[in-house]
Length: 357
Image (cartoon, rainbow, N blue to C red; front, top):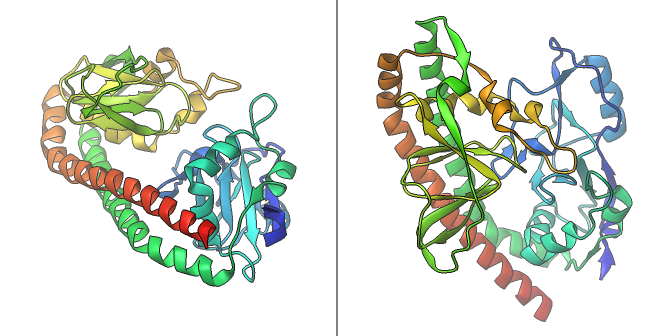
């Protein structure tokens, strides 16, 4: 086993100091919450900083296409590769790995670090309060890296599955953009604001003790974690994070179980869940964080969020228009869940073959 730093030009983390927010700034200060399976996701509500601060920080970080970024606190181990020269920088909650491409391909490193056994080892590096991985531990992280030819072969076998996953995420993104247009249209007709608490009641999820495999999804803050043989609610329902990945709003289209890391919503007004699912996609729930070691939301914090209010009639019209969009999105999500299982299994086989050879 070698150390990760032996294959890299640089391993560092994001900016440690807190930059003053500049709402007119051209650049963003992102954190670990912005790293998702779909890519680096930026919301209009994300923190903007001045051009001067960006240039000063970017001079040190030198973020560029091909850098591997990894969440080093919160949901440890989330990974992405920067696919262009970014117009953002990261806070210290993100580790940044610049591969020496003569020794290590960024695509292979991402796949390597995605392995379940490697993810468990990464989480064992967590220290301090709040828990995080320090840069030195990331540099010294032990890895088993084959030669470039083998790395390329493994990446090429996984890439077709990865491409299908990304295509589905693009479909979901386009669905959300269309839904946002609908939200803007209907809300522009009424010019009235209210709060989330006027539309839904949040219910606590709880730990699922079911061991039998079944047809009903169990939702956690990071997504569906398993399928069991009984359900908590008949759905459909809005799923809102309570701990962990605070910006991951989900929608259960049928019967489901909600784990203890999420809330699920009961509608106080018909069709409110569908409306809020799309309207909250652009809201930065991280700003409502009340936790220290573990990012957390309270019901009161969610209830206080201000949103454009629609009449019952317009909520019905919005939900009717969004029904087709939801169907397309749910299908893409379901296919991605299956593709990610395939990717995980294929990754395990390829890596085991690499070790044997």
